[in-house]
Length: 614
Image 1 (cartoon, rainbow, N blue to C red):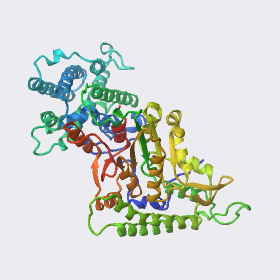
Image 2 (image 1 turned 120 degrees about the horizontal axis):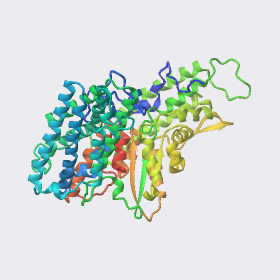
Image 3 (image 1 turned 135 degrees about the vertical axis):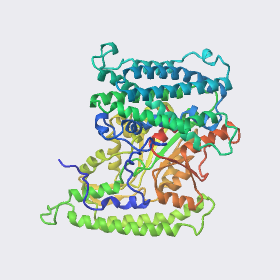
Image 4 (image 1 turned 180 degrees about the vertical axis):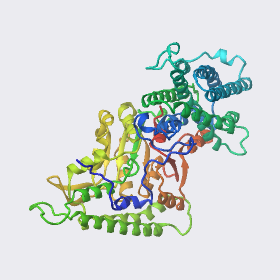
């Protein structure tokens, strides 16, 4: 059976809600030409052999694929405190002592890898890498002299997490990799070279991670900030020399892995991923004696607080907009002409008629939407007032309802089969990390958390089947853990009548549903609300929630918000500032809605790391 969602030869994907925000389809961004300072691309979930074509860069592809682990490290309590300059000195001393143990193991691993390399260039490159590690050790020794006693390392024995890291590195460099012969039994130089490649697969994540963290932290240093206690650490890892060393390590991994088979590339992927997970564990194992603002659930008291997670659906959870999917279903499943219409069936247009009707509706919507957005913008930028923005968006709400009425009157939604819609829902691609985030909340019953999806989607069946397609999510409670608030098709014997039972059509409908849900919650607990959205239609909910997180790249959302005094702050940047103020006693760690501040996130990985952590 052919797919219900083919690549259409008609401009259906520009329909309705896509035009609302003038945004491009939220498909995976092209991978950067080099290791990015922020790995925003969303990778496919498949084996290394399939993901890495011969002319691509293995290190770059792995960096993109395992961005979730990099984000977990970035948003760890240790990283937030270090970046903000509020990290307690005892915690930093402990970290330095543990990292010294790790660096010594890394230097020895490089030495073993150098012995296994079979050409002079590779040997020289690995030797340079080892020199870089030794230089890093020397820097750590200067930290020891500056911030602690000379017996710092002796006083801090290797902890369990650090030991796991060092044992993994040394085992890999010694050839103790599944499916590989012991070093002494290797018959050919090529087999020994594989050990060098595998060792680089285990070392590269650390280099890439620290180069990434150094760059991220450096951007947050004020130019006149001379009293940041960890400025020297940040400057070292953001320096041109360390960034170059990290890139050289990635290039070396690419070179050593070039002659490997698909199975051997999969082994490198597993080693890279394991090394990255150990790095995350290393950051979260650092003992903190100070309160932190992340993960959000760390300070969450389920006995006192009720965590309310709200999310939009179209282009917040999905890759494509649901109205475009429904349009495709209508056209693909329609008859080719109006002849031979079976008696007794709900009348519907031919595919050609539908294609033309959808095109006209789409063009009219786009033109009128742009006019509506222009009409609600103030003549000049104003100070943020929630009530003022609410009043302006009432005009957008009237426009949305008129546009929806045209869709119903056109008859384009007549005759869709419910099973076709459900099959399309199961094929609907969701944003990477969305399901796993909801799944983890659903699994943790002790969180006392609720998940609500508020959507303009015309057909609730599409949303329900999209989420139920995730096996692990279903096992964690699935739809029982989700409260879906959206519109519903009207059906007669599983065939749509073309009518819709409207519940959420506009920004005003959304904020009303949002307020009603909070109002219906138990009054014996304090609500902490988080709203994740991507469009102008989400603005009121985003601002009313205690924490509003914008995902995606909607230009109209930012334009409207900015003109009405809303500030958009990158999520990590905002958290570092909040951690700094919190530690300095300048403000309590209180999240409060209608502040006029929204946080921007590049993906669900950032949201997961902030709210749930490891």
